[in-house]
Each structure stands twice: as C-alpha cells, then as structure tokens.
Image (spheres, rainbow, N blue to C red):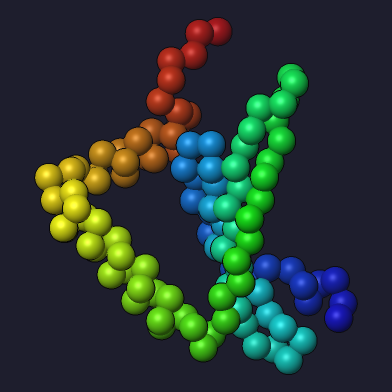
Length: 107
C-alpha cells in the first residue's frame, strides 16, 4: 500500500485536560473503513513532557453496538447516578480553552 493511502480520511480531536482523544477514520487495502480511537496522556518528564498513547480499533460491524452501548452508559451515569450534576459546565470550559485558555497569563 502506498503511503498516501494510509493517510487519515477524517479526524476529530477532543482535548480533555492532560488527555487528548483522537477519532480517526482510516481505510483498508480493500477500501473498507474503520475507526481508530486514541487516548494520548501527557506526563511531565524533566523539563518537558512525554505522551502515553492507547489505541483501539473499531470495525464497521461493531459501529452500531458500540455507539448504542456508549450512549446508554453515558445516559445511565447522567440520569441515574448523577442527575443533579451540571454537565454543561464542561462545554463552557472547552470553549474558553479554544480561545486561549482558562488561566490568566501575565506578559
């Protein structure tokens, strides 16, 4: 397979503090598609950082089952375990990070 064929077809990044999640659509040699979900965690080391990555492959025959199980699990946490919790506060924090962060910076 040529290197160009291995490029991601679609990618979505979700920043979550010290973690970043990547949702990447890729293709097989037979022009079939699958999803890779990668969790990248940043850890301090010396003067810099190292990144620990965990990857999961999700194939088309499992898309519906995976999506339904994820949705049901999240809904259970939100409605049964934490019904009083305001999950929308995280959306506001994410928007602030997209425009420069939530911390004050002095220059």
